Length: 210
Image 1 (cartoon, rainbow, N blue to C red):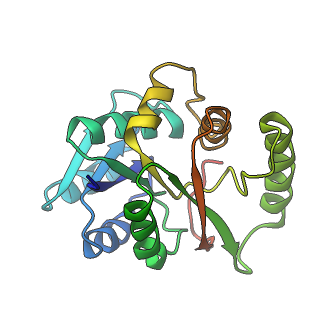
Image 2: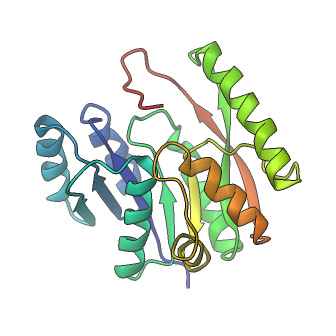
């Protein structure tokens, strides 16, 4: 069974969020929004979005960090009987035209983790590229493999049974370390992975919690 949804951790991204949700709904994906202790103005936008069809809102009592929010969303997705969850950042930096390719790959390879590797435009800060490369080197050392093409892109389609088995049995970082650590730990478990390109843009007025 292939029954996907989108999981979107939200922390003060009220400007970009409605457009992200609209694009996901246009692709036929139900959305699970996780309010990770956002300010009142963002919480109000989340309430508005939660009133839309096929949209669920999970409100955390306090900020847990990106990883904590994503893991709460993955558990909620399983509770709602979804088989797969597409992790999407709320800041609008991912080009969601890649959605159809990710969903097709997930349906064709339901046991695989479908991972995005970024294709940057000129908006990417140089410091981000340097930090990402250093992280990649550390990931390759820890995983003893080069098969993890990019460990920091928050655009992935998770098969929920294997992913939840990991996060329920091992400690995974709750903040920005989550994206990298969960890939390394899944790699240690020989989790099948399939990689697809996704264009990434950094808006000049975007909000980053990196």
